[in-house]
Image (cartoon, rainbow, N blue to C red):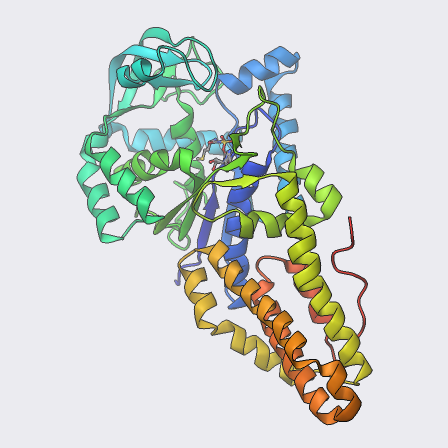
Length: 476
Ligand code: MSP
């Protein structure tokens, strides 16, 4: 049985509404799936929501809504958001789904020999729902920088996963590239972290967290969210009842930089304990800042993606977050930057070019045959620069490269002036225009994974008969 590519995205907590940062996992995964699609390969593509833990429980409580209803409503918001981004995962998993819960409990049973009970005695941040090391405590002077609340002292029973059982195997998988971590600088960070990585706590006393999956055979304990959440990548495939080897290991797991260490240390430990292969690639993307600042409710700078999409349209949104947001590094969003990318690049470089070529080509009775289209499509599939960037998952660079072709075409049309040549030598003008149209259509093929709607519109303009489109990116 040949393996079907499997692409995964981090599952967001549902204690808030989707913001622009949440879009990255989906957009990057979507670009990669569409790239596969260009090559005629269908993929399995998971998305979902992470619905357990105190933050979610307390939020529902504060709103006076039953927690089940609260997670239903918010999971739907994320589903709608994914659709709004033009992204179509094959699977959507919710961690509150009873099937997922049963499967995670079975996973716990199967890794039990690597789990042991112990007492956690140390600092805790209720806002982060996480333990704080002495070092972090000192560095932050006892106050959580994200929540501005003092850390609490805690002494409680937890189950621990023995990371030390797997450390060396994870290290060598990362070093050999069997489990590739992208980008390279994050790989180095993880290797450093692994050196001193302690065993990790994977449960909490039920009296402290009630909204979670019960630990099997211990009524007093509930699973900590990470064990529950990470397992989604295989429970969604039907593990453990079903054979998942048609899909697993994942080809690429897309995650933000803040959660890479959970995916590169805890997750591989769980997989190794289960005797499952490690993911082939974990891609860690950077974070989006707004006007140079971290997005936060207290600063009031959280950007609602719906606002951008409703005002400018979906492809302009995809354009900014796939090209001006670097695939690996942190990037900044401002309305000004967005607006100048829209009018200076989308409307000017691409929109005007399409308009000019369509008008000139139609005037000169040019037609692009279906065999021309087929030839262009084949050429796009083997474009070396593009394929190299895409295969290396450096999507923003692949997009930059595609855009450079569009900019070159703008220069070429201005240099060659086919409209002037048409007056004296119509045949030569025709040849120039056909050549320019074909080059545009080649660039357009490369645009498909990034701007699918726009690429379809451009494709439709240059048929056997060339039509004049309405402006692709109207003035705002
Ligand atoms: N629930 C966990 C993930 C579990 S995966 C098994 C979680 N949820 S989250 O809602 O906080 O984040 C979901 C995704 O959004 C993560 O990949 C995270 O890195 C990403 N982002 C959250 N804020 C972001 C930005 N400001 N910028 C870019 N991505 C960000 O972590």
